[in-house]
Length: 574
Image (cartoon, rainbow, N blue to C red):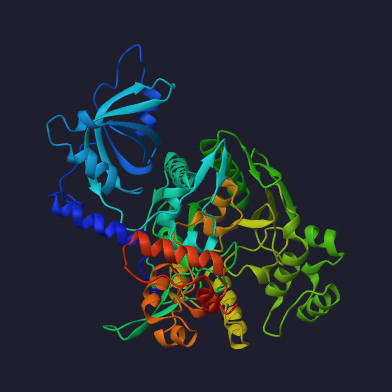
């Protein structure tokens, strides 16, 4: 965590905290506050003619404040939005003691504090819905100032937009950027809609292990940990596929799971090392059925979340209404490159990659070489929902061979806006074929492919007991949320995306300031003002720094002798 020098505002808030306690006011009370209404609820329900909302209790943060003598207004923000609160001194202080208004409300409360209000709804003379406060309770004191986001005539000023800070301090982002909250409300709606859809079909939601002795079900690099008691390595799961198919072997008709998966790979705008995936497996179905099922589900999700099958991604409108285009991988690649990759061997594919200027390395087998061509030439063109079907055998070690062409598999991937959204198969249920495919993955691993699948002999054993014809599908919830909310970065749909370690704040020692000609008594002042290095001081305007120093000295009654403009100029090296 970075070192933190208290700012002037933070020191003043700590002083207010101490004064509140001196007045016998607990700035962090333990007692519950009986909330009976919300900002949005009052806005929706209040009718001046009916005189309802005569007794309401609301709570939230104070976000703005206008003090006008014996009466004031402030904006209270709760989880549903904002509402104006009218505070009159004699109403919240009916007796002789006016401390609660004159001292506490006017001087010791700050923007960001949590306040509880009991009162009634009314319309002001200017026509604004408000709550007239009869009682005011401090519920939590904020000792660190929020970023100030200003809005006037529909224009936002000083917006809190720095991605690094927003993702690292999502709690602040949610407070000052209300539209961010809506993204996560929609994310929850996406998951609940999918769950309701699956449950309506009679499928069972299950849970499978996150810590696994073998990281199976996908071709990816896993995170490795160690179990001390068992003295054995364990892996964070890269997929839950094999466990779910074992449950189909066990007799369940259909199972699904919303799972956290982990892959020790790169990070970018569409990849996070920890991600959420939904996987579903249904007995007695094939990939043709699963395409229809996926279309029906996504259409329902789009309507539930956005009220329409159409969503906006930048300047593109994407329509999730059924049916979706279906094209074979053979036709898609041939259409873009002129090559029929399905009949090529490894050497021919390398030559094709070379001619097409597709990057590859010697560890890549046929599957990865085809995938590389696919990524460079095909995927980005699928903007509207498109099923890419019938993948070559080498790309799909867990998938059933195609019923009409044994060099292909019954597999599809759904692409939307140029990115893969889901992956699905007619699942391989031949245990002998499955073992052979695993052994081919082992060959790739020995060749240096660190993303080749591990052999899971327990899964092979399960298949030997018999698994019915089954179709399975996995869908990335993070990417689906990006599409349904119009976000272009995965970090914007994760509350707390993975970040690099926070850098420590650099702060020069006193000796460096003194070497620059800055008197020792002014060093703490410069630090309080946020100028933590001599270099930072040298980047300042001498005239502005002079005025700021004199103002700070006077405001805080430091009693220091003010420097001259020329002295400050030498501090800045100008």
